[in-house]
Image (tube, rainbow, N blue to C red; front, side):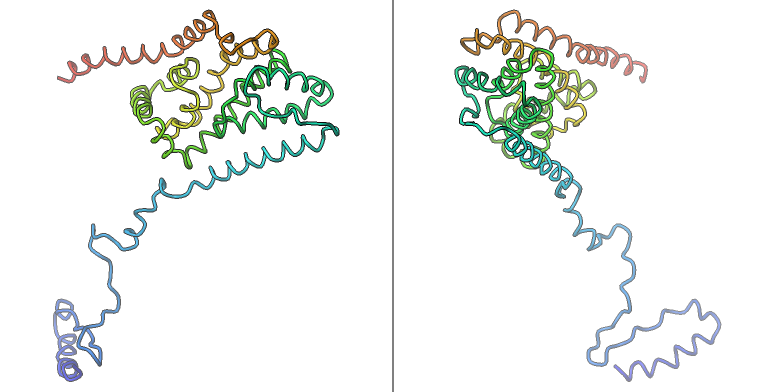
Length: 314
C-alpha cells in the first residue's frame, strides 16, 4: 500500500499544476498502514431521504409516548391536598370520639352521620367544609361508590344554595382528577370494563366534534352513560379538557339540585328511589334534550347544504 501511494503521488501533483486541475478526478483516499481498507475522514451528509440513525432512535419517543410529567405532578398535588386537608381537620377538631366518621353505605348510616356532624358544623364550619370536599373529591377521583350519600349530606348540613354549590364544585374537581388519572393509566381499564360503550362513545364524539359541548351536556344531564365511564373514557376518545370541565360544571347542576333538595328532608326518605320521582326524571330529560338540540340542528343543516355544495361544484 505504501508503494502505491508514493508512485501515484507525483502524478497527482502534475495534474494540480496543469490546466484544468479543478476538473480532475478527486484525490485518492489514504490507506491504513496495516489494512488496505480506505479511511474516510468523515462520512459526510447522507443523501436526502436516507434515514438517519439518530432519527430512527427518536421515532418511538413521540409526544404520545413520553411520560406526561405535568399530569403526574397534578395527580401528586391533588393527593397532597387530600392528605393535608384531612390531617388539618383532624388536628383542629376537639378531642372526642370520632368512631361515627365513616363513609355511609345506606340511608340509616347517613342519618346517624348527619346527626353527629350537625353538632360540629355550626362551630367548626371551615373544618367540616374542608373535610367534606377532600372526601368527596377522593371518592370521585378513585371511583369509590357512595357519592350520592355525600350529596344528600350536603343538603342536610349546608342547605339548598350552599349545598348545590358545594356538590357541583367537589364533583367537578373529582371528575377532573379522574380525567387526568385516566389519561395516565386508565386506558387498559376502560377497554376491559366497557369495550362496547367505549366504541359507541368514540363514534358519537367523532360524529359530534363541532358541537361537542352540547353532547357532553346531554350526557351529564341524562343517565345515558354512567358518570364514572364518562370521566374515564373522555381523555381516551380525545375530548378536550376545557369542554369536559365546562360540561361537567353546568351539567351536574340539575342532578345536584334534586339530590340536595332531598337531603334537606333526609329524615323523610325511606329509600334512594324516592329521590327521583317521575317529575324530576322528566325535568332532567327535558334539560338534556334542550342541550343536545343545537348539535342535532347543526347536523341537519350540514346534511342539507352538502348536496347544494356538490351541485355548485359540478
